[in-house]
Length: 375
View 1 (cartoon, helix red, strand yellow):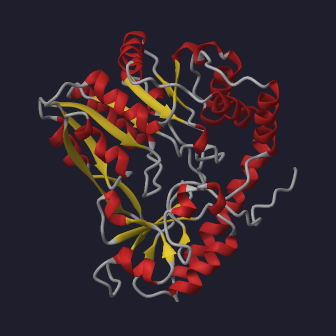
View 2 (cartoon, rainbow, N blue to C red; view 1 turned 90 degrees about the horizontal axis):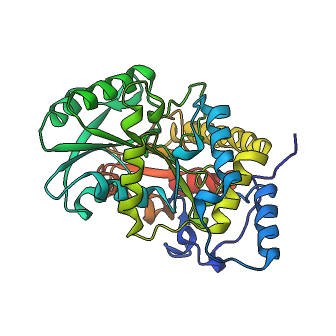
């Protein structure tokens, strides 16, 4: 296996990086889910070849058979999910797809259920589309985050509830839902005729010996489910705006496509190339990155044990550390972190102001600096 240098420091402030230019220069940015690792060589090579072609005009994503075939192959190899090529709809991003789903299948005044804590732009999606947001509580149980299923059942039973936006693996909590948990979600949605929209952008970042089960593969609700995925987080190509939605049911798929046409959901031509390369030629880089992330997670686990006020329980997936700071001697957790020179994502953005989220997809030395500043 080729050796990759995930310890390499790459200067990013001069590139207009959202991650590195959001905070002042004296703040170490460990926030947005954007890694600091150089992309796999095959991805960079594929992009270079396309640039050498010299023309970067409009494309028809549905006619890029090789990119779609890469998605089909990856889902079978990695998740044992056999899909058909025609089920794949290309979109610029997960947030765009969630908003498009809200528009396509809900009308103003309908209720959309969404788990909390959750990624801020997903929490915003219902109200941005003139819908009523109903948050479903998640809670810590036996050392991992899971759903309050009684809360989900109660809110799904409301006749106005039309959709449930699921995030699996959970962002920011990192839990990977079990088969039993997904079966309960499936049963509740079917009983109350609630469509399931599943954000699974972190599904390829599994760090423990557990399996991710795509919502669309569920035996009963899969045909009326929208599953949203991307290579963007896993392979650090988020800036290339390329994601894919899996919709088995033809009627639902066409309704999604017809609604989102007005939103001009063009997929970046280089993003599709990068996605294809990522899913077909980068397995060695991918496995090496997972090993490095496991090491970073273990480092944070040990480091936070010696820092008062922080309770970090490592999760099974993602490169995001969701840290309970409710016992920290500070009125404002986020301002406390900034005062120490560390720039995480504020827990308040996910609906939990007493938490903080640290992105550990970075060289180990960045984490060492962060811990030194916090101590």
